[in-house]
Image (cartoon, rainbow, N blue to C red):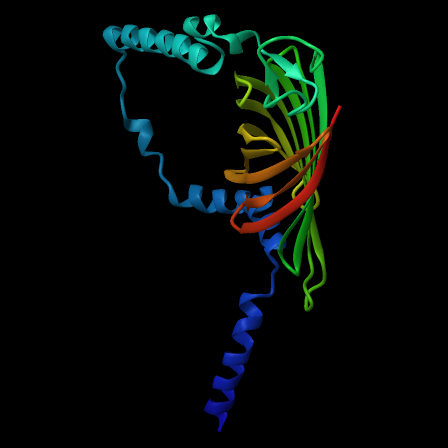
Length: 280
């Protein structure tokens, strides 16, 4: 009888142990500095200082080849990230920012010639509601500014909420700020890359380096297909945000819907998003 009671106790207590934490709480713990300090101390206690006995000799030829390789990489990186000499002859090199997509014919974010449909800068706001399931929801607010034809700035705020019947509710806020360079600028397609920082609030309270990539394809009026990805490094973990959106443009406004995937430390979130945007 005692053995049967013990087995019943273990069976019913196991789900409680496994699911005592919500996904947001697990995400906060995996990004926490204290958690990584504990794991780092364990690793250092097991490691030895074997590298101290190794002897490295400098090699003149290796140093010279390394210098040439770095110089070649710098030139190639500039051409890839900024602009190659051949592209300076292309009309997209001097493309202007449109006041908003599809203002004139089938032009998207850029126009090859200046006119009434172009301007020196443009500000866009968007707000999307995201949901993974009835217990995990969120709100994604984005401010995007374009100026000087190629430059841009983005401020992104992601707020997540989780309802946990047994252990209370939880929330997590992620703020991202990024300077952007619009690398490809055509009337139908544009792509960008950016560098910046992300701040994780609540229990984490950490700041990390972030980079991002994105593109938008204006395949037919009034639709466009948009995708964005950015990654942040915090305490040997990453925070990844990826989305793919179908946009419906109506004058200065757009209606967006699509898929958004989040990786916050260890947990992954697969969400559906829908929202509105405006440009001026």
